[in-house]
Image (cartoon, rainbow, N blue to C red; front, side, top):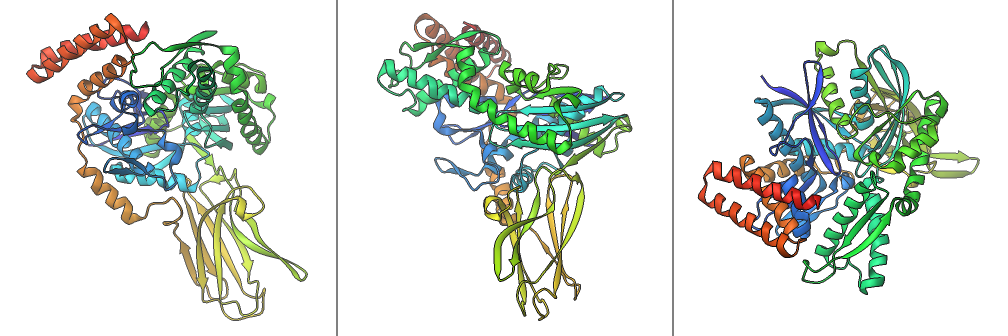
Length: 572
């Protein structure tokens, strides 16, 4: 018998959850860790690395490591390394494949079904790209769920008897979502969603990188970002600074000196929380409009919200909790893990979908994050206005939903109508996102305005759209399947990617702890100097010798010694 899992496919980290004995649990990966970095690397011999090993190698081999590709889902961007070419869907598929393998190893059974989370503000193209990634990975997924909805399910699992209105602020590595919901006797009703698909914790780091690079250039005479390897270390130092400022008022940032000798004494720059908050203010201000829009769409004011739930690792930054307290005039809740809530909720959703009797009193609804409509022509006397966006399904509509609108021909003896489908909120289609088009033929000859067509939008719980067009006078119906739009893989490309993935060379799962230990040690080795570097180098050599001797007991002991040393030096 197979198992059902929930996956939080994140920009920076990904997690797997399962529901057991009425509790949502996070499953460990091959390293025994609960979070798997959303990173993919290519080893020197062409072997694919996924997770912690890839993330560690980002410092020593940045040109052979890929991260943050979730932000490019739904685009046709390619990531290149030697002979390898990857689309964002393929890189996401590699992460999903690893998560599925880890879950199967832990649970001792194959995965029969999974629910995968997506940002609430992911559009049609990004959602379809996520489905394609699941298919490439061989992951059986019938349902996508919005990340704030998943977090609400995790909250609702422990508060089924409460009646309250909640605002979920989900700030991950690359996306920001806001959902307003109501819980009544186990029924979780999403009332509104808004967000920014290109705003996340990585943007806070990027601002630190830019600001500190300018300060470093004044002292060094060169930009520390000019070499790819130096930039990778500089980014890592700024990321540590961002995390450090969550608990400290001031941190010291080590800026690697550009040049071939990465072990040279770094430049040390001091950064206070107050300075960082001033730098981050423009990002924080970008969080205001989605929050206001979600409240407006829900018809609520901030004082009508009973609880504010923060989700996503980036919400640990004090500046985010301060924003939440300022806007809602109440401290945000700290009762659920911001890192794990989404994966826990995904596990609840997959159990709900399967009719798990432990959750028989729970129900969850969701809403469309965007308006969906078509391009139309409006006549004003003798003048015509083209490119008008006519919404058929408004944002905030409870899903699943089906809506139909009737349109008429614009010209005499018009034999065909081109139906162009758009997603967005602007009045002109050119300012929205085009999803696809279809030319409906066979319209009977008639005077302008006499023939009409019904356009029906059906939007399912995954946020996937189907468009049916019917010529009213003849009853002829055509369906628009949006398979080839800009940035979308065709079914043939998806199948080719599945075959290609099976042909890639991976490190055996049982060897991942060793591969990752060496990658982490190598990354730190480049930063250390003097006796510390010599000591770590000796431990690395001892570990490599143990690997060559292939004695499992010796390998385990040497790996433990090496990782203990790595942790000690990282703590300073």
